Image (cartoon, rainbow, N blue to C red; front, side):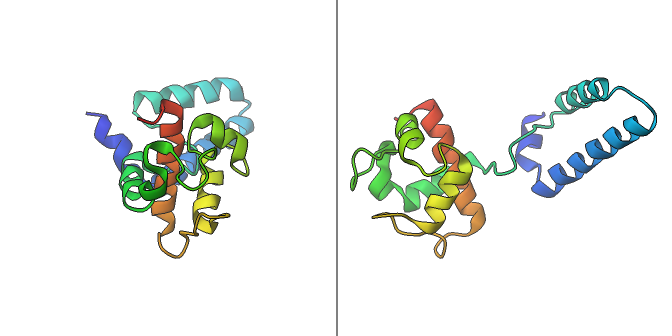
Length: 146
């Protein structure tokens, strides 16, 4: 039942829910309620209702896989790099070589602007597709490429 809810939560919905939590914290301050207790209650409520707290940049991993296969796999199949073999999409290589470290924001920057032999995809893919492919790259580097 709850699995469909996770997929359909939009960034607007998440923003609205964060605004509600911020309002709760402000109200707690006004009435002298312990903020730590309120935070625990808000977290428990979010879990009970299946609300996933995600990083602000979290893209859609499933969509990202499709974008990756259509646009990136020619050079990065299986997380490898046919042009610069040491600069793979493996976890350790991303931590070592990716400007900004192994995180979605850094992948978004690299994909958008390109670097060295990698072309910029900022004019070819929209922001959502780039965020999705970044989420896919980070998730797959964590799980391990096949």
